[in-house]
Image (tube, rainbow, N blue to C red; front, side, top):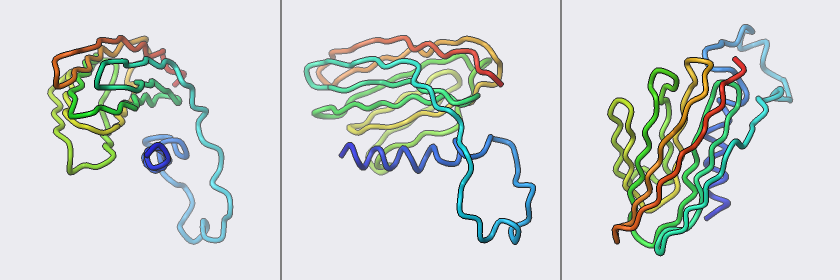
Length: 160
């Protein structure tokens, strides 16, 4: 399970780590054929990791940054469905990608500054920093039994 999640994370983040968002290839396709390497990616920094320890949910929420990209990995393993809520400042962060392990078994809602996810699997949320400023992400994880845990993740000002 962990290997599959790692593989999916790699596929999701690969385009963001190899090429800066918004840039375009300046070489023609024919010039790129025959190359072997893929170039250097962005240095990825793990900013914060919060352990989630509820009776029926175990795991962590990990915050990572690379240049102006910010992603939150919900590496949680619930016994049954759980709900996760994330609130963010949309003047600093722009939500760009939601990546579940299995899109068929998930309920995802995004409204302005709030993201709600009901699932029984790990998932990733990816943001772009639109302003070079410190920000926080407020997270609430709740089990079906009503137990909950809150966390605050601190997003560093990017080095855009």
